[in-house]
Image 1 (cartoon, rainbow, N blue to C red):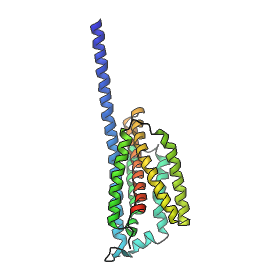
Image 2 (cartoon, rainbow, N blue to C red):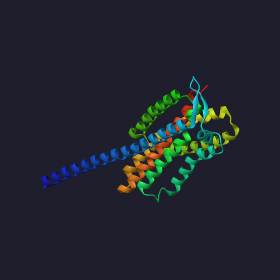
Image 3 (spheres, helix red, strand yellow):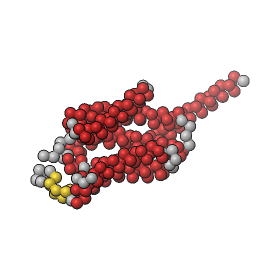
Image 4 (cartoon, rainbow, N blue to C red):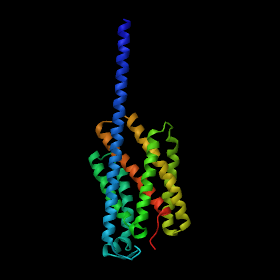
Length: 257
């Protein structure tokens, strides 16, 4: 009888160990999917921003300053159409918020990539304001910072849930301040928004990473739900990356002279 109990315990421990290994493999596969979707989205945004800027800029000075815009550039950056370009990504975010539950994972992924393309059009204006060298430098700074923060959120044993409500409140405050500053055009307020924005999106990167990890581990999801969460998670991390990049660019980017 004792031999039977001992064998049962060994079998039970082996099964538990196998389940833990499978769960760990599943988590790694899930997070890899999140990062893959995010990376594709960033690539689409970058290629679209570079492509549109090449079509929008007609000439440069010997120092590299933009001296002329094509009709497309004038329409995108100088006409009232610029407001449509600026606000189109926000419209996509609202659409995602209302339709996320009803969309399939494949539709959500297609919409995310379409959103990334629209964001690229919106971001193309940075090539008119900042030097290409500083844009590249800030991008790599953002990528390194994001990687470290996301890795921290994934590996830390400390719960970051308490940060969530505080960070969301900070995000809402940033949005309101940014809208107000469109009319005030205050350089001091813009500097403050950028500094606080870097801190908020840095915190959100770690918090979102841990949140996605815990949602996968502690939620009973089928493959479709997991795929949809992968896309939504990629969108959250993508937005953190892009916003942190913009904040850092406004702080450390070199403007064309």
